[in-house]
Image 1 (spheres, rainbow, N blue to C red):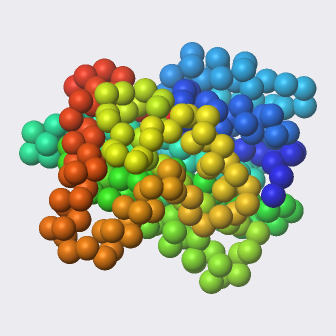
Image 2 (image 1 turned 30 degrees about the vertical axis):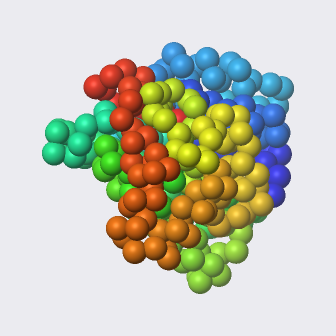
Length: 280
């Protein structure tokens, strides 16, 4: 698929991977670029960076943890005829590195609201129009995480939110294929730690290098355009998945501990110690 002339919606577009997705869509010839985030100043900066001849950029401050705000923003897009050809569910939040029982329940609820409920709700609101608009192929990219494949201490809510959205996204892919909607494909992306600042202080496990934002976006974008079902990065995450499948739980726990998986969040500070870090 080519995004030349396409309408592209990106959530969490203020920084990190979201900003790079926006620049990539613009460079590849998108015609309409819709950027959602919570920081209006940052959104405008990204819009200015992406701006080029023939491209219309629209920004909107949208709190994805607020279902009513999400619904209103989605309805506005549809009313204005901006049915996305490409939907990038990129926005995400992660709380501090406290143990589950030390964390406020509200932190877990917001993590699940933004990382799981929001992409499900947004995609569900937009998908009927995307299905009816058969003029060109459609792509949905859902950014999950390697932590959705493997449990990680000190990020229980985040891992749960990504495991849930991963399985939802992959099930949606199968539903679309089963219903014969071949012009809409879903790609689920499960990267390990990406060096965007969102996971500042986290330590990459053994054999799992920290991904640069540029590399992470390049892998996701290529998978999106190709319509690949699942992109996992780096490749060593596949090894961990195999080991978890073949080893008894206790055996895998020991291996994961030795590889540094279980201690990877010990030094996490994010974009501010004790605060939630948002945006990829």
